[in-house]
Length: 205
Image (cartoon, rainbow, N blue to C red; front, side, top):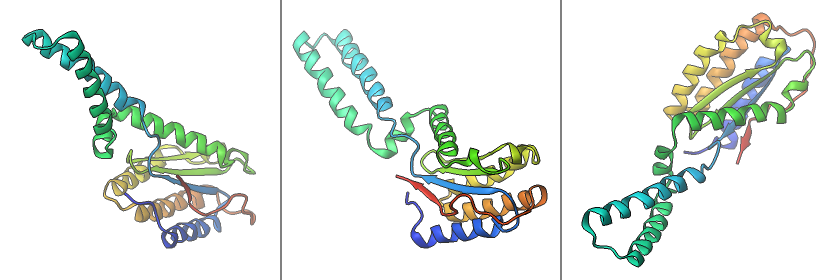
């Protein structure tokens, strides 16, 4: 998984510029590799398995003394804690609901941190992507939501999510920005020249 390089980021910025010339909306794009490190979840799994497995083995076999059982539990916990930190394994341990909740929470924080709620006419739009979670969300302020029904973004999000899963994040951004621009130009057309927020892709590290 790699975030977009400088040339690809410039393509995203150019697409935003093209849309904002024809709409009053202020569009901000945010990309992150992962919404959270989820460090606590692998530890929970390691702790649960550590408590259960050595105890079950000893219950049925009676091979382990108290000291050996304790040392075995420590050893199992340390090994599992390291194994469960491997990215491919780590992601499989985290429930989808937790991954989506963390990504959604980060998207809403970014809406506020990027000052999208302070635009003139309340016309801020956030396109947020978290690659590890394969999560895409579009958030808009009241000036846009009052003109465009939220259902209009669902198909765009579904297409973008599929592209992220296929490793086509750049094309996903370009397609999404263009599709959003069609709705914005129709319902929130340009009435005056302005550029309140930066148009470059925001990358969270």
